[in-house]
Image 1 (cartoon, one colour):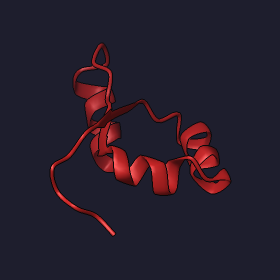
Image 2 (tube, one colour):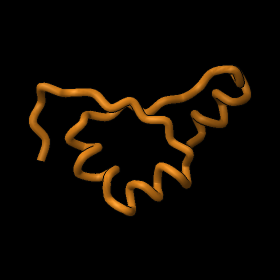
Image 3 (cartoon, one colour):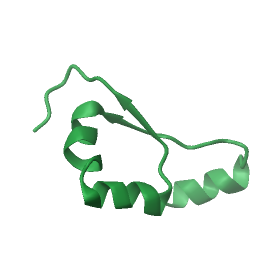
Length: 55
């Protein structure tokens, strides 16, 4: 998480987003634990369709 601290110091006006494939979102971030992680870390997500196959 050091990069977040560095970004806040160097460019505080920037907003950091986490880009994740829709399969990861569907299989992790929709679960209660994933939802808590989003809230706890105040994550801003960009969910995208991927042509790769995930587990």
